[in-house]
Image 1 (tube, rainbow, N blue to C red):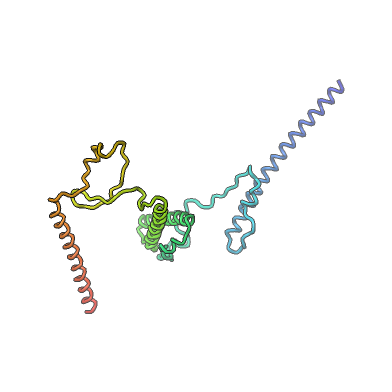
Image 2: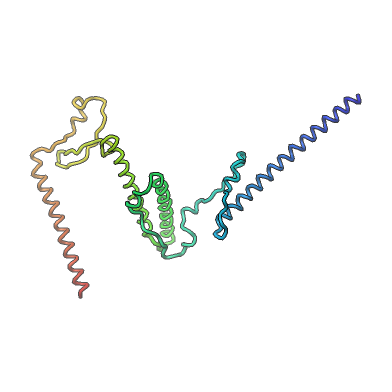
Length: 254
């Protein structure tokens, strides 16, 4: 009896000691996570401060070994849709020139991909500022920035299209992404016809036979009349522009 009671006491003490170890390990893990989070926020605040030199290590590298902890910081949120607080209330905001095609051609595809999203975010921010200015019925500061971003986006798309066309010419010898040919309809208009795939040959396809890729002879006089009308309108616009310029010169001289 004495031996069984002593053995039971030993087992009870072992279980209590094991429970204490589990509780202490849990508390230490929570404290470690809290300290790491504070340390990360402290390093992030130091990186943002212009008076403190950046450290040779980062929070991500120091916490890379802690796989069980997720301590990601939300850098920015909806404030990216608004301009910098320093520009609030200003009538003019300094901005650089738009990207030129010559500058964009020197960039790699990866750099153009990143620049595309930068310009897209800038455009969304400027459109938000414009809408807010309309809501408050005030003038948007430096509205020409929207036009600069749009020009940069158009030129970036042009450069990307040039590269895709050059690659396609090298691989397939075709300039267009979808093969086709220049055709003329029954009214004499020339347009780009894109080839399509059909399940049956063209001479058996009634839908394809309904398409007319020629101009009848009786339409040719009307084509000349249409060309004459176009030339008269262009000459009339050129004459009106010259008269307007002459009147402006006379007004400025007087």
